[in-house]
Length: 540
Image (cartoon, rainbow, N blue to C red; front, top):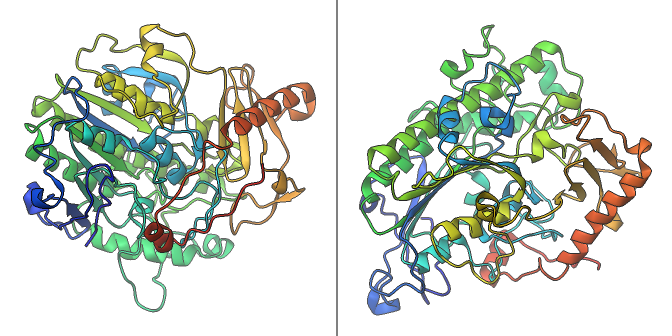
């Protein structure tokens, strides 16, 4: 049974129940369901307690797609592939404010969720040992001191719900479901410990060639777990995006007429493995289906042109699948009459390389626009600014204060993000002159002219630097891209512009220095023990 950590401001005791039927959602084998029903005699009824602040009672729906490139959508200009079909999100964009220059801060997935859920910068990220394969600075739970968007809205009288197939949120000891009255995990993504296989590894020859398999250590165990998972969830739907969307739609059906609500939807696709249903793959690939080549390499690797094309076709199929099911979700919002009283946000956490620089996926050595530039679109009921495209740097920790502004609510004092709606109304012309991003120990400073990256942690400044745990050691030197002449960031010009490198490096260091003391926090003992977090103090 999954148990939600209740808001420390709301409750002194924790209660939980696996009660999907109570939410009107039925029983699903792939989903662990938890819904709290506080007992008034124990902690005071959340349903009767007056809200701490009163807003305009607009609903909020936030939809996050993982690994969704900005140039998947027409509103961001030329698509990376002309034939890419995203009709639902393209149509939705026409009703939205489109933020043209949106970027994450700390990266990747879990680190980004910390900035999104708490509205707070996380750079410089600190390292805590985790009991899982991913070992990256910033890859840890929300701090006790954080007050999340869900907790803030809960205190304002909202009913809050999370529907997610993001496997990293579901690991034991995680607390990203904090503040949600209902959360439902859709199981089976990636190497989620969901399906079981025989003691020997499963045959994955239908997924990759034997030569490709031999070139990537641990790939067979990864794909074997994924295949065992897929064998289960395929019994319920063609994709996990479908399962996420259907649960979210059922929740809307059961709760659309309740007090104002906040529904947060995490859709892990199009994150790898890139394994789209055939009806979406058929749009981009009409050759044989075996092997499917659904897991690209993280390391820069020589690949045949046919394999590269297959990887791109797989990703495109995933994107079209995500677009279809988000379209179904948006249709439900319209069907239940919510367009006139609901703020709807679509966004992504990061993108992926699709063969540029000979690279696929993401990583500390791939911090270019294909990975770091993300879509962010907000639809408001009045549609006063519908179709407006707004320039100016916005970061993911700005989302929380922005939507709270649209709900006429004040952000918690701990929030460090900015209200990006000021760019929309013209109240300000700029929130910041440049953005900083980090992934592992590599940092980026980006302004409108240049994108510069270097190793930001002094102890990691070595000629040899492992950019990904388990990857071959890779020589990493500073990189610089001239965005005016090279918008796709294909040519490193660091050697040609040492003065620019020095200036951008100074910006990176300035931002990191300003964050010292802002990005620490505490964990409760139970969470620390369950996630195996061991604090390693940063040098200042």
